[in-house]
Image (cartoon, rainbow, N blue to C red; front, side, top):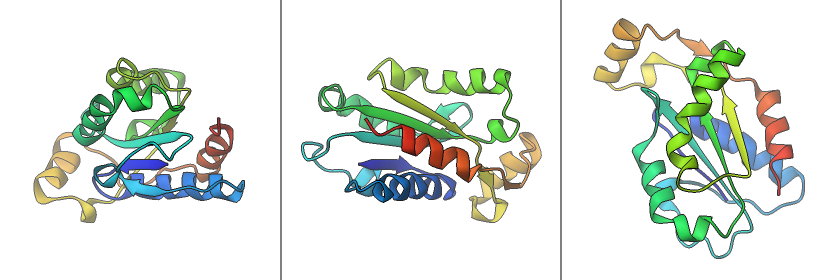
Length: 159
């Protein structure tokens, strides 16, 4: 299972690439929004992805991990995050971004973590979010995702 939560669509595209890469290896993969996930009993592994907003995973991802803790502790679980901080992939930024997974890590320890740069498309944001991104955060618009890095992580994240 590759489950995700997104705000402006960048994370679903990364999740889709991860699911496709794993499927190319011959595995059956389901891709779905975190809110649509039912029982985890049929899955051999779970990969959970989240957009990052203001240094936090999305509330629905955190809630999912909290509520499914018992199930996730018995299934290999990996996390990935999509974050504009990594448009400059430096050791300092990777350390900063790694901390964003701390709240999830404290609930269920993952077997793998993926940190990926995101995409900022102002036209996909709600009015208030666009204002914050442009005027306060001064987030650069553009697609900073490294698709090869995403595919390599997905290939290496099959338990």
